[in-house]
Image (cartoon, rainbow, N blue to C red; front, side, top):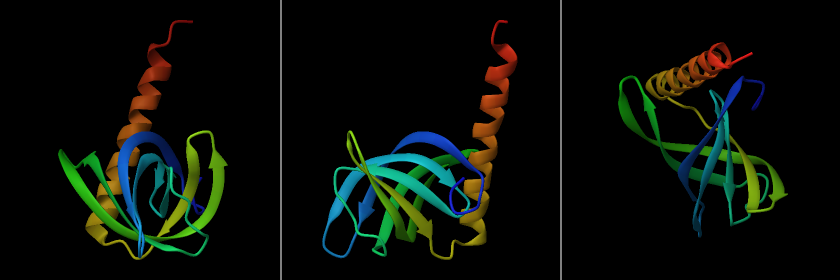
Length: 117
């Protein structure tokens, strides 16, 4: 769960851009209301970030350019885990995120059905 919304795990490239610093990282989880990203740069809680990542959804690859606020920061072995809550996504952006989440859930369900017992 991210920000009271069901989330799915993923591992995709992400770019995080603050007022003075841009950092590369990994998108680790996504929900309709926010993301968890791992980066080698720390951001303070309350920092407004612009995030760029790509999601395969709605039958194409979609370049996402979203804004959000850092709501939590935790140390990780690879740097920092940032929980970022989105600021006002559009209906189209919501549709892309929802389709990606549904796709990841279908993949997970299929993997459970095909595991040998």
